[in-house]
Length: 309
Image 1 (cartoon, rainbow, N blue to C red):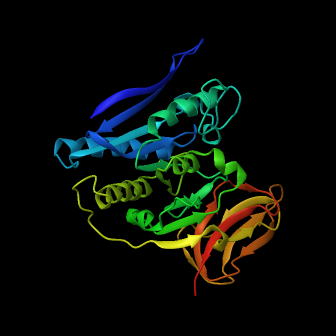
Image 2 (cartoon, rainbow, N blue to C red):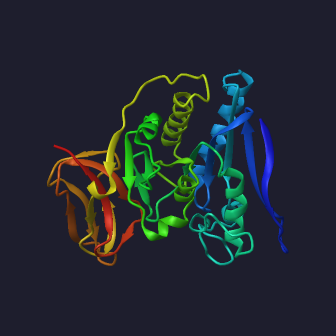
């Protein structure tokens, strides 16, 4: 294992910003793994820290294929993590909306540029990221349909779902999109939480990455079990909005199998405690996404489901 500073930004009032990377093996730039770009992505940071630990052991055991290199970057935004902010503390901008970056631009553009220059030439790119809505997901791999995507490669993670997404204009400045444009096969991996550590979900993600490394010929460690992924398009997800504003009390959780008409949540008046409405499932299916914030607004999507017979 070799630790290095990939990018450093001077600061007037505190220690310099440093993006640290951990390299394993030598040779072809095979796989780059990026953790938290946002300050509340604690689960993503934890997963990468555990991957560093596992890969260090695999390297000591000579389980990394000769001529292959893996780079792990636990976080590119330690300032936001230290200050408890999701976005860049001084101007509230999102590093994951600044790629490929600009070396003479604003601070987050410079950070994106400095990072991207170090990682744009890898064959595969894996990003542990989070959704713009606060909530939990069934663990899955997301791919943007840029023309460079490869579903068969995405299935090598062995996670329950591979989600295909048509990029929207604001997606063109994300790491995933730009990786693909620079001909890196890029994958965004989602677990079931963001701002806290969930061990079971993290372990599932770690095993998925190790399986991917084995299937792509980067390590020798064979996965313990084989899992098949279901491919779905984002448009196939059924969004279930909340009919009223109020306190949101879910009665189901991510991953649950649901029958049509089953109660998913109760909405109560925050002042009187009276039930305002109930949210029922319009289909038979599985909870793919569930909102976790306890306060909701009318017409806010609080669940997304995959439809099943």
